[in-house]
Length: 305
Image 1 (cartoon, helix red, strand yellow):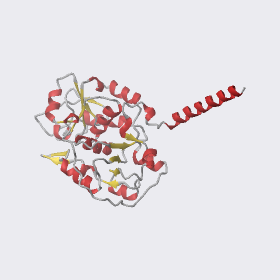
Image 2 (cartoon, one colour; image 1 turned 135 degrees about the horizontal axis):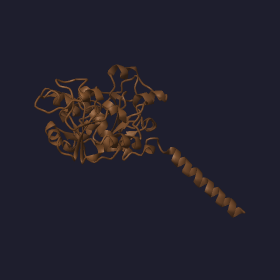
Image 3 (cartoon, one colour; image 1 turned 45 degrees about the vertical axis):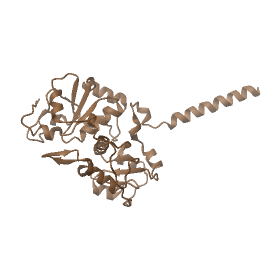
Image 4 (cartoon, helix red, strand yellow; image 1 turned 90 degrees about the vertical axis):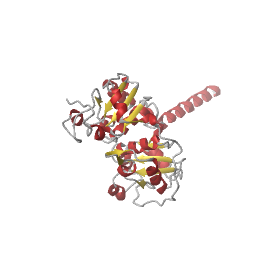
């Protein structure tokens, strides 16, 4: 009888332990992503809020940041830090020195874990993550659910501007050409069935009804999946199964190389993150010039429908 009671007790403990382990799995881990390591939960960030190796960057509008932000978060205007006008094309990736200067101002180091968040489903935060990866920063993450989830959950909010110990940040790697593309590479891809161009703009922009350049329309043979389809109403990324159905259904994941574009390569980086990190596509490049470059160059082919 004593042995039986011992076995029952041990079995119960094992069951409880397993149940607790399953309960401790974050919601992110349960969505089936290929690699969720660069997407963090509000719980995780709150637990690491005092970790000096973590740099939190808020890329919302300055007035929103001033009203309240995650404690310790620094503010950056993403359109000024992660974009510049180059050779007449707006929204291009700046030189590395420009980003280094801004990272130095907030005391970032090469071993810093940088967590970006915004107020719009990680749209601008994705641009920041992509830009930092292009130049080789090793550890950058996005906050799942962004600011709205943090606020909704009643987590601590601050209006204080953190003091930074300025650093002398320098990227340690050269530009990663495997995740960025120019118009010449896109032009060559048009007749190549192994390469897919994913236009992440709205259907109206894609069809040429909403014109935001000299010309409206889209790149010939490109496929359209609006970036916003990748998130739910709460601004969180959809599950891997939902995302797979979305992009496979549009024929996006059939190519050996996928190129993403939008107007100024912001929405494009959001879809790039989905395809690479969440769905595990191995070769995805952002066309940095996007429609601002393509739509304003009369020598480049377009379609409308």
